[in-house]
Length: 497
Length: 98
Image (cartoon, rainbow over all chains, first blue to last red; front, side):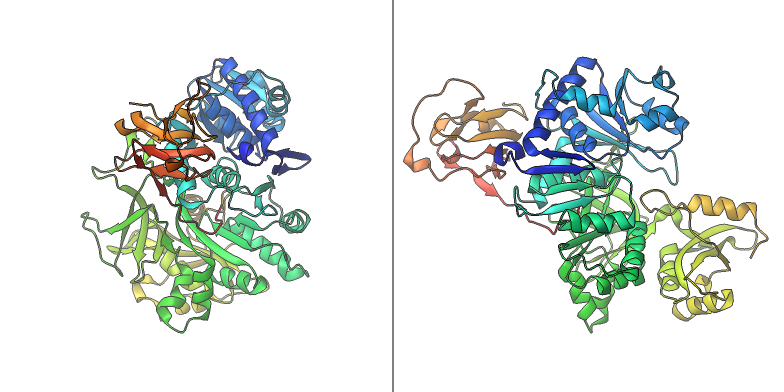
């Protein structure tokens, strides 16, 4: 569709590779031919992405097969275990990861066929094309969840789930001819998939930075005249550090979206100050909801910054309002729908919401609502506040405590750069609250002072029982804090303060 | 009933669509006053001026039965079921967040 509307437009820039929409479309046709000829039942990709991601998404769809990009950060065993869960897959893999798996033989028994990414690209240039149109209700993409709390789950997204988000929130060809998006979210993440779909649909040039580096990110913004970009919190933190150290103004940048996990409020404020001409967007979504379901818009950011009303100021910490095609409810533990201002579990409903897992089936309730397992509150204006995962809830002396509540308070302390609050087993309280703090550069925070800082804002029972310091928090590639690792590490060294 | 994913072309203008959500009503899907046909099928007839408001590229059109088609190639004809024009389903654009 994009190729018939403006075939000569540059669609993808990825390292030395530049493709027009027509070239991308032709490659996808040829790629579909390779896939159809392989006799495989599924397509998997292990690699850093770039042009390979849109190419394989569209080639798989045109061959009528389901596509799964796999997290290349996993161990060889982890990668193999996920591939083994896919039915007779054609595995397209970047050279370096094939080496780590011990060559094509390393995938024997789990892959139908193995092709190196560069070979796939070369062959797609003159393969006999295949062009099918997949049933919109068939599964287009299966993504494995990051599995920070349990075994990765295989989320099934139909073509309809994926396209209803795009057609519902993006006007076809609405981007200016000079618009460009810088994409550094990984291909195995839902944000990587939706970036490829929505930017192509909008007619926005996609510039890929597969391996994130803040200096290179800043350089590419200027070199490719990038107008919009999406980052996860850890990336934003490193970009802000580069911006603080230099004279970068990023004049071409109009929109900067952040999301993937919670961004500390002081970091958001700092970014807003450093880039006053940029419209900030906080996007919230889950794999199971085909990406974004709520958006805090640039205007929302500005209003919150300028407001005197504390309720409006507070919205800077929200994920904004639900997108028009998605309904939301906050429910208590008994399933009753809660009014604004009360905290419970977030349920969502809409065409982009899948809620289906391979081997499990649909977890939607009878009326189509998906339980997100995120703790949330809606304010009077319909702004959504996310209070972390319900799995992360600390139960201390019978009281339910959301770590996010303490983290928000601690993050505001000038000596705190980053913080995670976790519960550890405790003979007296069931669980004790431990704040794991990364100090600000040059600061030597006093544990007692930090506990006092929390006690002033929250109830006494929500004061950390212990404060410990670390140089950094363990995170995955998309910036999600690995709480389980923190807890395990604390358990191994219980006496340390 | 027409299958979801079916691609159809106008006989009397350049319009092409993909059926996103089928309904029985689409058996009588027309463009520019003439029945829409499978891609590559023989074409005949002329554009009816009463059905010449055009179909816009990248837009979704719906009828009251819940049928939905996506225009993949723009054309001069009006999309309709029988004599009733389909209505445009508006996207509600959001700031770029991907």
